[in-house]
Length: 228
Length: 228
Image (spheres, chains in turn brown, green):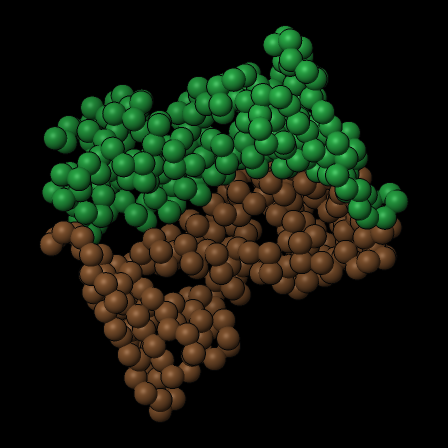
């Protein structure tokens, strides 16, 4: 049963000048040819930019590879569907009868597309600055979790301290390759810990940088598995 | 030999409040640890958004799939490297000696990364509105080529008229599948023309929509091969 869109917009902290835009964003293609697919295309791009900028500013020392991985962990179908479910977005979607019967209101793809479409609707209604304010609020918890995982200490130190606290063997770092000319080498380092069956590989222009990268990936894996 | 960055910024029509930002964007990691990799991460996201918005506005009737394909054809390493070469960007890059010797100034990846880094530098220097003005100018020719390919007429009509003008057999459309419930079917249609050895497949919620999608893809292929 579809609930009133203004209840949802209020829950999301949004007031639309043009409420039709918001309804448009909630309209799945099973319900109408005038649906949210184009808005989703635009919203995906806005979301990608806003999160990229947030991470760029939040982690001034993180190399590009770490920023990319963090963005991928924040912006993906599953994570957007989680955010949608937190706000019970499925209750407000406009779906065709077949999608309603088959549970479309709880499908990851439909939920995440709707979140992106709402972002585009907000952009079209009120511009980029409000998106740069609202999207980080929407991702607040997920961004905070990232922040907690990346304190002042570098990844190697954090991983070592974590293993020590658990009274486990320290991480093992093995140099896999060092390629390139003398002053422009690329290093690949493998990091293995007893808690994970698969080692992680980091790369960098210094050996230490590669080790940090590998430790960073291990920390992300541990966080994903809720071990950290 | 590296030329003066202010010559390049002038050629690009840019005046930086903070010229160091622009130099930063031209600095490859082979030249310095303070290089353009983080800016490239941010610039990639800004570029993706600005082009998405352009396409969204330029093609109000194009479905999401067509917009995505158009964006992918505009924003990719090869196309960014082409733009970089048009402005002889390689002459202005700051590269390590090894990269200089091995021709890094003409490598697609290094050139396209620098274009994205310049976009982020511009954003940090002057904000989004100037990026929304400058990036479309940078992509002007490529956007115009797209625009020429998509006039008022629908893809099937344009493809048919093109084949007729060439005195070739008309396109063949074959329905491959129709799946889903009665009012929410998805259709897949294959379109074949004598000029291309591989057929194209379009999908849509109507058979006609799927045919239009398939014709659209054929038109894009023809444009890419410079046949159109």
